[in-house]
Image (cartoon, rainbow, N blue to C red; front, side, top):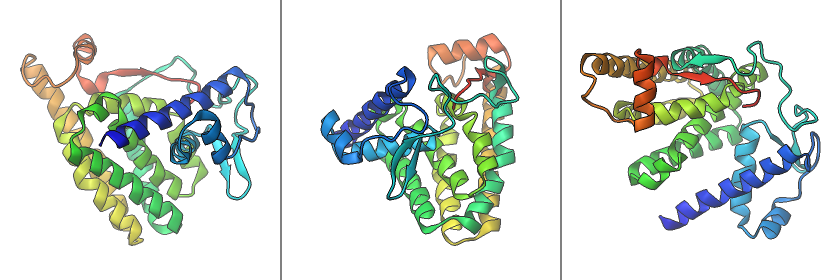
Length: 276
């Protein structure tokens, strides 16, 4: 267990090191990084930690891995090391958790269907791996992981792996634009216990449907999962409004955010960033 915690912390350190190099301009759009072995040697970590960091940063759109060609900073970065802003919504605009879930309902069921039809064996292995990580972390009941947002991060990466498996760049781009909001939403919704049960119940069903190339069930299970999330949040909000002092499972800051909105978790707003 301790090894898993240390490994998680190490890949985060590697991620932050690479992101800092991009932000400072040391690494620019199109630049090739050192090999995994060279990075591991220079940073004093294992190659598995570097591979995990590269994998996560590629899901975030900061890196691009060419098989047999190396690791590159994505060409979508501008001179200042951030994503080119092609969003219809401007940086600094705000959106609600409800709107974010509505976007996911529009994108992810279709993505699951397409992943069942188009995902390669490598895509399926990655989806299965992400599903298993989420299941294992929950089963081990590692409070330390929750405090470090590991569960939330892995949940985001599971869903992003499915959208990548759809092999539709427009769907992927739409979801990547709100990647940071996906993370922020998990830090709130993870405190509603029924949503943990929803992930444990639906993730394996979605994964198995994709593995079996069963497009109809993959789409239906994903839609049911997201509608389940929405429904439990509505129930939570209704209960909180009826009994504001009962059933509080959120932190002081999050309780303040809910109370200040007077509308519940679904009305909590996020500031849009220029990068995922």
